[in-house]
Amino acid sequence: MIGAAAPTRPSRARAPRLPAEGEAVLSTGAGGRRVRAPSSVVALRAPGPPAVLVRAGSFTMGSSEVEITHAVTLCKLEPAGELCVDELEASFANELVPHEVYLSDFWIDRTEVTVASYRRCVSAGLCNEPPYASGGRRFDRPDYPVVLVSWSDAQRYCAWAGGRLPTEAEWERAARGAAGRRYPWGNVYNPFHANHGRLSFDELDDGDGFLELAPVGSLIAGRTPDGIDDLAGNVEEWVADYYAPEYPSGSAANPRGPDMGEERVVRGGSFAHGRPWLRGAARGHDAPASRRTTRGFRCARDA
Image 1 (cartoon, rainbow, N blue to C red):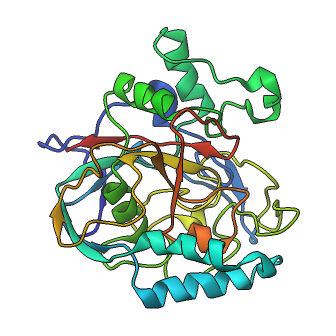
Image 2: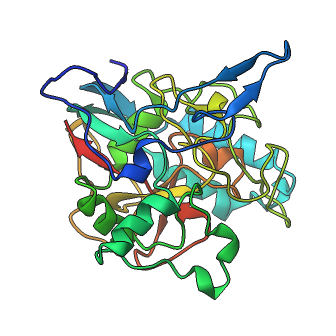
């Protein structure tokens, strides 16, 4: 089943209320900004809903050996493809084994949490101020995704906003759809659909229009068919699960990941990652206390 925009009439799965700043995030060429068409007609585009409802159903989570081989090929096509040696190639094996997952209805934020939205939680005294003053001031813009947040910071914000971090399975379902597409927008890579980087000695790439961070929702062409923005690139995102280097075998219903671990899962790739890491099945992991300028998060809610 495909996802659906938040309903406008009362129902059991009513769109969750988010902090006011998250309800109408402005983005380049969207969010009510004026866009001049080739015909010189001025068009106004309304912002998308604050969250998207993903309907219950099953999908195949993880990657086959064939898909992992394809990821390695993509890695070798990067500018510094010679770095794709055994250790890096083996990292894609954490997508094994493909398995069927059933998920109940859930809501997921349309965009990554912005600096402005996060600061409302800081003002309420319930979230920690990101350490932008320690060398990250250029990322401190209201419409940018909040970065330099730990896993606990992200979890605390989502709880304050009435939700939680998405599970790894929910995040992958949102990015890949029920049919298991390769990228959030489809099966064919397009460098203009995501704010990405490259595997290189200079990992930044401004070919998509942004050297580093972009305002959330800037690359509308990279939206999923369900209407979810930035599930590839811009910032990689914390999810709820502890990390394990291989999925459990067998089908699962609403999986929550391992009961314990030393690291948490990170999904989606960032403005510093090349195309192999923008695939919807790609997995990262890091210590939960880590803070990166390439990492943010979005929230989810039970329907």
